[in-house]
Length: 163
Image 1: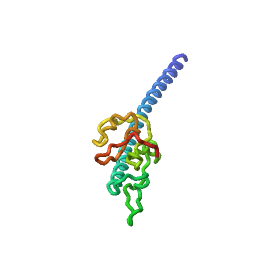
Image 2: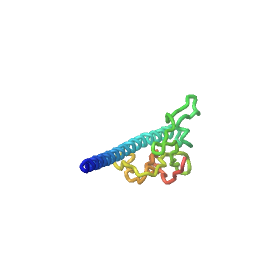
Image 3: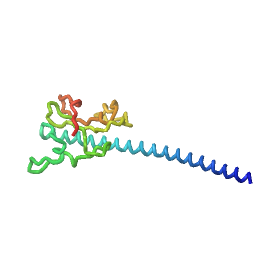
Image 4: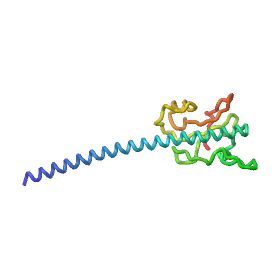
């Protein structure tokens, strides 16, 4: 009878080891999945931010001034045929809200760029497109500023305001 109790104790110990190994494996998988999701959000932030930058550049090229608000990029009804520089106002993928930080043009002359309000440190720190090489030095996503600055105009990125 004594040998049967020892065998049950050994089986229980073996089961506990298997559960611990499975738990560690699931934790590692969760970490990898979370990392992959974060990288997807970063890629989406780069895409959406560049869409805003391109829309601001398009508006500036047509009007020779910056838009007063991001909504001006979606539909400009001052013309017989409304002009769309941006298909829609995108959400910030890092915060999940359409609550972008706005980079003001010098002298408060409109919106010259956007940035995420997320302060988390980015995973991506290299291999940025040439226009965004400065992102490699950013300590948080809020340092990724998507700015249109025509030649001869120095971007006033420190003049940022929440939008």
